[in-house]
Amino acid sequence: MNIQRIKDFLSGTHQEIDGWFFPLDQLIFYEIFSIQNSLNIGGDVAEIGVYKGKSLVLLSLLKSESQRLLGFDLFDKDYQKITEQNLSAFGTVENVALQKGLTSDLSRRELDALLHTPLRFLHIDAGHEYFEVLEQLELFVPFVSDKALMNRDGLRLCLTRFNICEFHPWRQWPSRDNKTLFKATG
Ligand SMILES: C[S@@+](CC[C@H](N)C(=O)[O-])C[C@H]1O[C@@H](n2cnc3c(N)ncnc32)[C@H](O)[C@@H]1O
Image (spheres, rainbow, N blue to C red):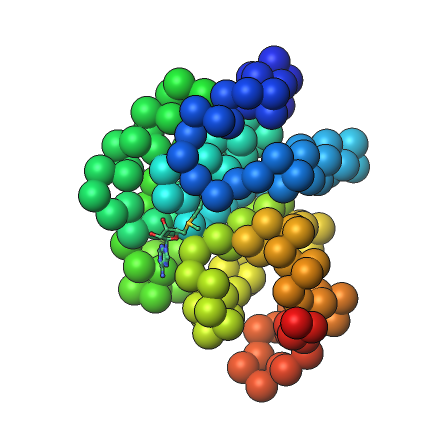
């Protein structure tokens, strides 16, 4: 973790980056990584839904240098370039890779080539419809470490819109007819 840059991000530089990643979610990310570090939980990190890199920048600072961070997005317009600039200015580009395209076009084989170490953290923040999240969960969950924590669209939204207490163990999952995967509460 790059503590000084993390402090800078949390206390102000996040405001320089356009996006949807709010202070409470930023602190929750920081806490999750701190807990993982204290428990020696390692692994790579992936984010689906980068936009201009606001949450990706913090993830780049929270992971250790040797851990990889993969950011998946359509990268409309010049957003990939903006993300790269934001990483350089406020985060780190060390071991960070951006993948442009629709996640539904990704094959298991392509992901096998991209994701080498089980993920310690998966942030899904792309399309917010149930079918979109489910599709991305089905694609990425096989790559998630048994010890990982997963965040979907900011933990706050996760807690207010979904009850995630009924996750089935990773290994038995995903299953399309598993209606207890997410239980809508609102
Ligand atoms: C809410 S924004 C992400 C916000 C970002 N995490 C932040 O910190 O500001 C959603 C992003 O998901 C991307 N997206 C939506 N559906 C996608 C898909 N199926 N595959 C890849 N990217 C997708 C969009 O291009 C958009 O940039």
